Length: 441
Image (cartoon, rainbow, N blue to C red; front, side, top):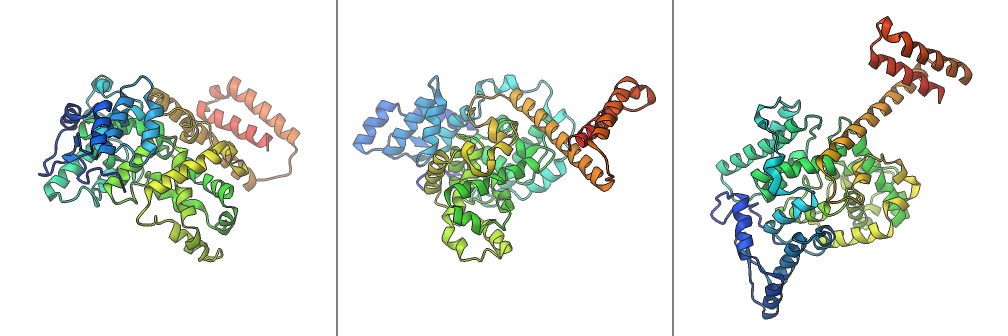
């Protein structure tokens, strides 16, 4: 890895935790201008420091370009290019400037955005017990060389960030592995700034994973066979007996559950935050393609073995090569042109589609609206499946004409007098939907 983010996740060499604003201010005091960075690069001397280490001339030049992009009127395109190129955003000092832009929030207005009611006073979220269990298992691989007291403080901060987000947005469903994602944001941004970033991430980037059903998450995985078929039909056929559930843990946690080096996961987050959610699925497809020879050594008739191998990411990951190939494949085989009509089967409310061309432009209200529409769509789908299952269970010969008449009669009766006969509104709607579903087969 060329990226050299600090493995201590935001601590100085003496191990003391520092406030993120202090680190950002320190960076601003010492960061080079684009011109000075270019001149220093020519002379071969480092001109700035980040997190206590000197930057190389190449890093200084890139940092200056990223800072310039952050301060420009249209930063997204430039930041996307920088985050995708080798070494990503270089260092956590720079990430603290760039990530808020990629997530479409302004840290200057964070206090204004906070609820007037302290989050600690909000009702408990239904998933807080699970949060506590997962937080106790956090910070296994990084930060390194910290005392038990320091790690306990980290865990308390992690619990606070997750709980704040869940209480402020109680419609979100926590999933195991969410803490892996949040701990990266905590280490990069600090406890005072992580919650707002995680709120935007939850509602705008990984919303599908925080709905009350696993179905939207599974829909992400269904794109994998289509991507593989477009790039390598033989490998796709070889894996055709293996369901793509092997990719669930990695994609659900944005790879934070599997990648053990802090510098690597921070660099990968640079890339993922700079692109739409679908790029994460392409990234996993590229990991599969990179293991082609290994996978062909396992018979296709042993899907359990293939699943076991694919569910574990290879170590080490050549992130730069994988990112580069991901973008090549993504450009050559965009989602709209994937085989099997895979893209058309994705919900229009899924983050796969709503982030397709809207990086850095959506706000939290848009995320809340999309969440509500997606949840409603899930309920309708569930109702339809229940109705079809019930129809199959009590199937009788019937004509579509009879069913159509039945729908009409029941609909009129329910709308005119059903409520007067003690039938609740939600049950009325369910009956109407049930018969309408039956009539349409």
